[in-house]
Image 1 (tube, rainbow, N blue to C red):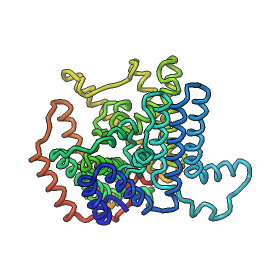
Image 2 (cartoon, rainbow, N blue to C red; image 1 turned 135 degrees about the vertical axis):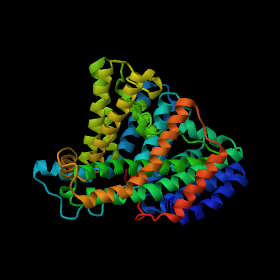
Image 3 (cartoon, helix red, strand yellow; image 1 turned 180 degrees about the vertical axis):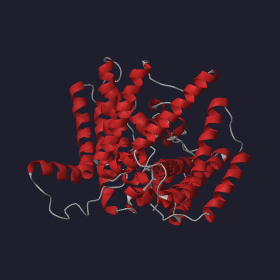
Image 4 (cartoon, helix red, strand yellow; image 1 turned 135 degrees about the horizontal axis):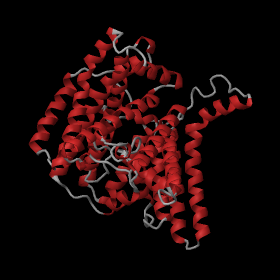
Length: 474
């Protein structure tokens, strides 16, 4: 059951009615039942895993909160980390390590051993959610939930369950303690976010996927440099539209239910540096990595060299979080290296830059240059994120930087026909920049007009082959 299916919206309607009309306790129980049905729709065999993970962290957090003995509290925390990260690593990385470590010791897995291996959908997301709860309780930043039902609803809540945003317990659980207040304005905005998300997914992302797949899964050697660059830029557009579209629908659904989710994207492609990019892209993951990994490693408190190492390790593990492939590890390593170099060059404690800080023509020029450099770096590293292996990545980079700019006319024509799909992404980024720079905000009338255009496009524009949301695989 996916957001871009009729089945989902038929499933949602009775949940919405119940949520607003039933007493709070009944509404939460039905929402929990609906969330478990939603997850079980993918594969009911993995429901016990979801519930079991929730039981472990609920019990562990209670034990941690009840103890005043430091070593005892740490042992309970280590149990939570071992169970959660062990299950995540077991399901997600066993095929990768079995194949590659097997080569080192001369062991080859039986043919077809991992062909049917399935990673439970959403395991990376709900594992990080349950861990954040336990860690916050351990740090005494959050009191443990008194209701296991509320906690399980937090973990399994259907809008963000399978692909985020990663919602903190201290943000979500207090919202379950009182009946939501109806707001026509928030309901209208929630509908708009859902329409916008569906448009980004079904019209933009799924159609850009056609040209991306043709380039990355076809004969790369026939691509001109222009076609290779466009395919990579198209992937940057595809993954933004796909993931921001999903996050937008999830946030919109929460609004329809009178709840609040954190934003996950803020026009990342106008970033004037990598540190700024990671405050705009997949915000809930980057903030999770900062708060629970980077700071735990020492952050920037132990000297410059340790800070650079902490940045690199954080992004390296962030890359591995995305998937069981060495190309994801390389993608994370490149971003970690880039962040360390950026911090070194800027020579400032936080290493941040902002378009809003530009003053005068030279400052504007520097700002534009920083945005362009960041945009190019991000898209070059997207090659490793999209490529199936290092061979594909190397071939694509070779075409981008070494091949003649003009060459395969057919491929370039195809790119030009799909270029129009990048226009809505550019428009969204431009409007976000206006809001940040001049505090401009659109009206309800403008949103209604935009929603009308997007709904029309949903019915008129031919959709590429329906695909799962990209981040379902993570």
